Image (cartoon, rainbow, N blue to C red; front, side):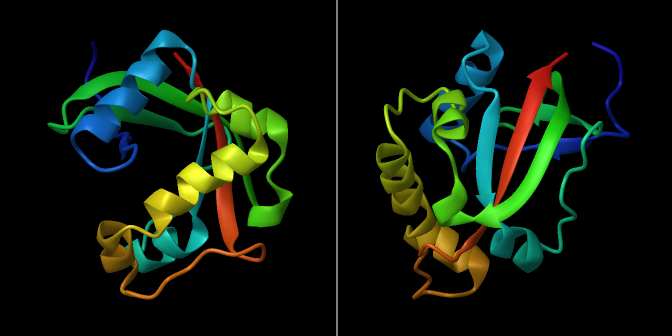
Length: 137
C-alpha cells in the first residue's frame, strides 16, 4: 500500500469488537454506508467528509487497511433516513426501525455521550445525522 499520510483516517465505531466487525463488513463489500451524529462532528471539531474525498480506513490499532472514496454525504433528520441507506450499512438490518434501534443504542452509550460532552444526550426524529456513502478503492 502506498503512503496515506495525507489522508484523514476513517474510523468506524469505537476500537475493539465493534470496529473490527464494521471494518470487516467494509472490506467484504457488504458495508457501503455509515451514519454519524452531526453533533459528534461538531463536538470533535471534525470537518464533514466531502464527496470525492478519500479517507483511509483504519482498524482498532489505528493501522491503515484500505482507501475509501466518499460518493455521497448528506445531513438530514434522523426521521428522514431511508431503507436503502439502512440496508447498505451492511449490518443485516431488515428495516429502518431495526437500524435506528441499533444506532440509538450506540449513540445513547455512556462512551458516546462522553465524547459529545452531554451525559443525557438522546436522539429523536429531529436529530441531525450525517449519512455517508462510500466505495472501497
